Image 1 (cartoon, one colour):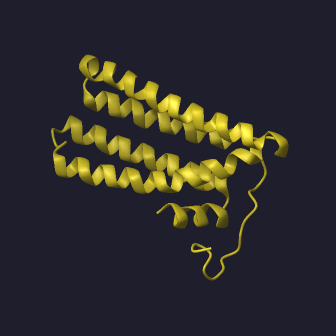
Image 2: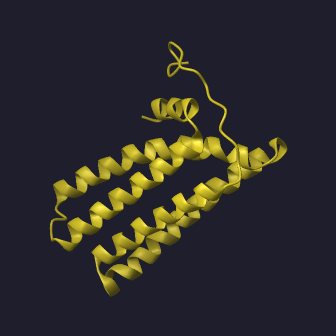
Length: 146
């Protein structure tokens, strides 16, 4: 889905797309929390929610990568992209470790709920970024293939 979602990020304002994707990830994490709290976190439910997570993440990734160059001078864009990717991976690693500590202490539902709230923090931060609208690519034939 990456190519299609990349085209989506090119056609619309990247901050708006990224905020929608982060809100979508919050909804999926909240669904995990509700399913865990209700005792419905079965393998099929996990599969459906994991698929939803993957689809929303396919929107998130190209929008995030395309937004980074808007935040820094052009000469700093490669370093900013590398730093952004590194921080994302470190955050995911630390988040998984923190989740591993929180689940035994508070349960899966609370841990997924905290995860959902973390994505809402991302939405709030994105809303405050002092950037203008993203450059947009008009729809064209064979755009995804190209």
